[in-house]
Image (tube, rainbow over all chains, first blue to last red):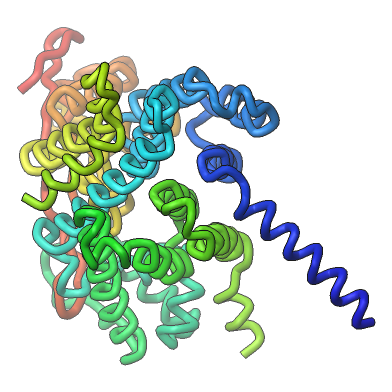
Length: 300
Length: 163
């Protein structure tokens, strides 16, 4: 029994070495391709070509390292953004910039350094803009309205709202019905009262401030000069953001992309951090595929 | 200043001594990101582009977008004003107009509607398209609607003109 356990342990260690010992650049490129396959982009005009190229590049090391491959992926993802204008999600834009960053980096003498720079700047800028919108430009974020409304109207948050917010399914449905009324009647006298348990209100407030503060922390840490203290915290802050946000937010594709870009800017010698990035990638996969909140409600 | 210091540090890593212009290559994606984001900010402030869209990373920052924007279409004839709902085939165009209600987009959408109804309603004189957003009171979350944009397409002898 002990021998068997040791054998399993050795195999797991070998697997770990395989993953962490892989060339950092190859690992980043492969995970980006995996993101393409796990979270398909665009419609039939773009998707088959993306699948084909991403699949072939995963199998062929030559295609994987070819700037042409990534240039084509840049054009396909860019074409998708143009075709869908203005409906594409922000993830689509970031994916296109990232593919461009990869194709340009593969032309450089030091592709890893160039890709690391792209990873840091793209994450830093994206989070800076997200903080700008949430903290300054939006009229209904800081007062908690956004999360209160979204958690009750967006069906993808329903399980978490019930589990953490302590809202019954009937109350949630009734609240949703009231909030989705699209009223043209300016007379508010007939407006029925929403049922919001204290736990739900607290949850909405915590989500509001936690999201803003962690996004601000990521922006600062990734845009700070590399030798600074803030910069040294960047990997942990990003993984903390991903581990908490994507447990609730239903945008796994964005999470995977952030993890891949974070991994790209992580120094090759920091193997423990790189393995944590890989774990975070898997964690987001589990969040996406396992309805954990629903299961917890069912079991409780 | 620290930002420029960071850029300088990174450039040392990537610049070939023989071809210095190569050192600028890695900044291109970030440069495009900033350009697109500035355009998104501009359109959000001037053309009511939904903060969720346009590549400015305003997603999950406001209730203004997606299901909280709604479109109303009115067919106008002498002594008649009737609200109609767009068919499924216009869904894509409707979504685009809701998220970015520019005059050009509203005009195109109104023309499509006019083309579909002009033979059914003989004396159709105009098509009015309205884009509304639902806002929520901070304390009670009471929803109320706010008119974002309105466009009227006038019909003259089956030809159309904008107003």
